[in-house]
Image 1 (cartoon, chains in turn brown, green):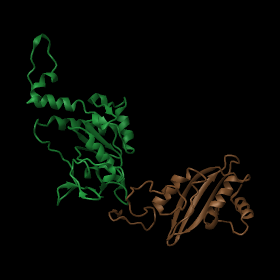
Image 2 (cartoon, each protein chain N blue to C red; image 1 turned 60 degrees about the vertical axis):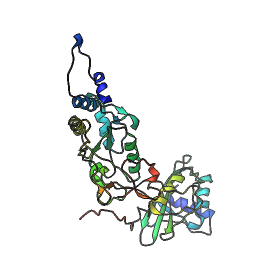
Image 3 (cartoon, one colour; image 1 turned 180 degrees about the vertical axis):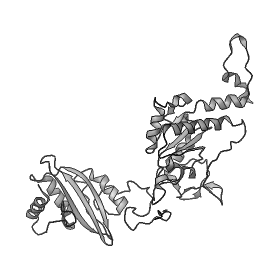
Image 4 (tube, one colour; image 1 turned 90 degrees about the horizontal axis):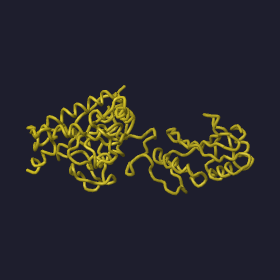
Length: 154
Length: 208
C-alpha cells in the first residue's frame, strides 16, 4: 500500500475525519489527534493493512508551537511499511499511548517523554528513560537551555 | 611491624641457602607494579581500544595486568570512554568498592575534559577527575593501544617511586570545591559528602 492508499483506506473507515498526506514529507499520513488509538488499533487488526510490527516512534520539534510525533510501522504479512504523523500543540503536548497495542512502543514513548516532554495518557510506566530521574527539562527541545552548557564558539 | 614479618614470603628462596637482602620499598613496589589487575568495564569507544590492548597483539599480560570482573579484586581502574552524568555516581561507587592500594587511569579525551562533548553537551561529565582521583591521563580519541600501554608503564614507574608508610603524592582531584576542600559530588538532601563515604548511586548527584 502506498501512503495515499493508507489515507484513503482510513478515510473509508473514519469518514467523519479527514486524512491527508503531510506536505513536508509525502511519505507520512497525517492522523487527527482525537482518534489516534482507534486508528492504530484499526491499522493493526484490519485484514488489508495488518501493521503487526511497530518499528519506532519519534518526535520533531518545530518551534514556536508545533510538535510532530512520527510513527513508523511495518506489516510482516503484506510486507508494506507506513509512516504516520500526529501534529501536537507544543505547549500542551499529549497523545494517547499505543503501548497497549504494541509492547515495544513502551520504551519509545518513555524516550519521547524524556527528551521532548510529550505526555502519553494511558501509558503504564511513564518514567524518564535516558536522563537521570531528577533531571529538569526535556533536552531535545530546541529552546532547551542547560545552565552549565558550554556553547561552541563560532 | 607485621609487614616486616611477611617479607620472606615476598622473596623467592635462593638455592643453596643464600639470603637476598633488599629494600622493603623495592619489594612492595615491584609486587604492586607487576600485578596491576584492572577492572573489566568500559563506557564507550575507548573500551574497544582497551580490549584490543588486552588481546594478544598488544597483550596486557606482559605487564602482569589481568582483567577482573569485580571491583573487589582490582588494583587499577581504567576509565575508558565518555562518562555521562547519569553514569558518574556508579563509577564513583565502583571506585569506592576497590581495595587500597588503588589507581586510576583516565583513558581518552572524554575522561579528561569531556573531549568532543565539551561544547554543547548537557549530559557528559567534563572530566572524570571531578569525582575520583586520577593518576595517569592518556590522551587520544581514542588512544591507540601503544598509548595506553605507555600510560600503564608510566603508572608502573609512578608506583615504583612510592615510599612505604608515606602518604602518596597523587595528582588527585582537580576539581575540588575551594570552600570545603571536598570533591564536587553532592547528595541532594544534605549537600556535600566526604570523599570516601560510600553511598548508593541514587543518593548521589554530580554537580556539572
